[in-house]
Amino acid sequence: GPRKYLIGGNWKCNGDWDASIDRVTMFNGCGDIPANVEVVLCVSDIYIPMLLQSIRTDIAVGGQNCGVNKSCGACTGETGSHQLKAIGCTWVIVGHSERREGFGMAGETVGLCAEKCKVALDNGLSVMFAIGEKKEERENGTTMDVCASQLAPLAKILDAKDWEKVAIAYEPVWAIGTGLTATPEMAQETHKNIRDWVSTNVSPEIAEAVRIQYGGSMKGANAKDLLAQPDIDGGLIGGASLKDDFFNVINGVP
Ligand code: 3PY
Image (cartoon, rainbow, N blue to C red):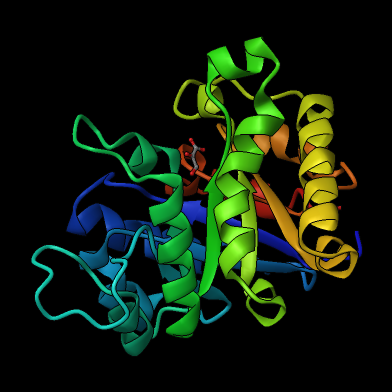
């Protein structure tokens, strides 16, 4: 495609220190990364320094979340995007559906996700901004309304320059951690609709340039067909990023 592929790994909260070291060793021993692919691993904050010191230099390291304040001292339990940036991270995921849901606590609103994204960009990070519909919303035919409602507050506060450092991660919630994957045709249709939305509501130039990743049970076995679609510019990978199957995804790019 016209855009450089972006493959993100999202380890979530899986595994301990030793398992994380083992994964780094494993990935360091995997083969070359194709020149048309950018790779980033997003791990728990506690493992970030270890990865930054020991993972191969062609894999960037990012956070899975960050605080909403530009530079906050009095924010117990948060990691600020300024802190991620200062330690050497280049990326952060914002708005993953698990955070929007809130694990039984108040989840992150569309406005909060947009604000976090803006602050992280202002602090010098690139952002994988996750959006996507739930099962009943797809069944209701409101997939694009949901995606638009998640993108609209972002479009409102970002300027053209900001968009250069944003990737949109389209992750249908019903495909996350369920083993269900959107078919390549279903994913392509929504990716195209998202790109059209950006064209209309931001600009045609930004729509052409912005990378839209697919997420939701993407793995080696299905990556090739998904990545062959014209509007799928990469992936955000959960479970498969814990294993060497991550490299099957990376090598699945056209
Ligand atoms: C998944 O693949 O399940 C994800 O949530 C990736 O972020």
